[in-house]
Length: 147
Length: 393
Image (cartoon, rainbow over all chains, first blue to last red; front, top):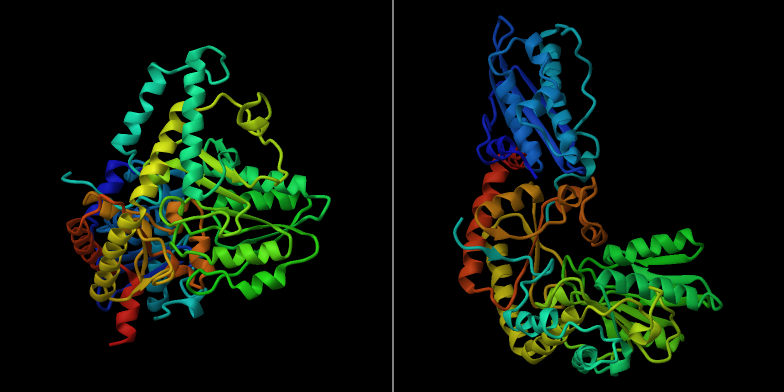
């Protein structure tokens, strides 16, 4: 079902974790649909992404696309990171099954959401960046019920 | 990969070597068409009659009440569509449940498009149909009640006898999809008031591509596949003789070993459930704790997504299944888990493990260890778990 690269990034995900006091954090997706991605960015004064970490709740493709997305934006400038599209993530993974393409969209949105957070905190505007579409807080009332 | 631990017996089972051995002569030696009048054909015909008898005996049915089909889905389609057509003079209302297999649910949706009305009964938190709700749903134009014997995902057994009684008190036909239950729990069609019953061989170590519909004598449902006069003119098509022979054998073996096997599987199942519930935090057992198939265990692990869990188990040689959306090809998780009241995000993290007679205690121990490791790994990656931990620090 999955390419070797997807399986590799799923089995050995790169950059799993959190960044304390991150420059920007973005969470996208919805637990109801079964996918949530959170991306942490550490951006220096020159606007270069020094570090990037992720946490993902989701299927194999969701984990692999998060892992690949973090690899692709690490070391890049903000403008370069803006060019990491879902297509770029998919190509880097040697493709995804059609039903999993939405996972790569989620990865793109997660990067944008983290950059949006960064821009908001620093009062800057990033060219081409729009307010993230997905929002984890949709349907929050249902989340994390304990039993 | 080392040894394989196969815990997806509700999906399909390994054809037993005895069944295969019984089938083999009917491919190359006794290959005659059962409709032929020469002795080669008659051998096939006799083999079919023997198998029909073996299956009828397991159900307490008569031989001429067993109609072979290509499997459980065909039997379900046949029962519903043909009953709807045959009894349209009485009415166009059908009662079923929200947790049926898609072979029932999608057939009901098709019938709704044809102008029939279907009531989908709710189930309680354990997946059991509420008899009071069933009684309330009955109308003068109700022609059929179809309730599964045991659920394929969570294993819950329905109060079939009581449902059958209610159906018959009201003069309504009663069909049950027994694909998961046949050969696993004792079934007597008379004692349970069953008019029609669907079943499939590959769920009980028989071959794939063969099933049957039990139709009580006197039930007026017509042919679904038109053509030749096979199956008392009710199901055309040259008989799948090797499949039928295999099913007869599988049914006899299952019936003979039922009690002992059920006791063994129940013990192992309860051991599995006990260990998982004790050793994996934030786990939940789905389905009824006692009134469930002997071989079925179904869990939800909070903050974890089912497909990831399945792939990681597969990497350790363990086969299970999940009701997560990602394994169903849609955005919604299992309709069964939603029907028992689970929120979407928890339903996404389900794991079904279904045992067989061949499952050992060691298999269960290895599986529990793997589940513990994998769930922990996935939780360390899960933003939901991160939020949960922070909230409760």
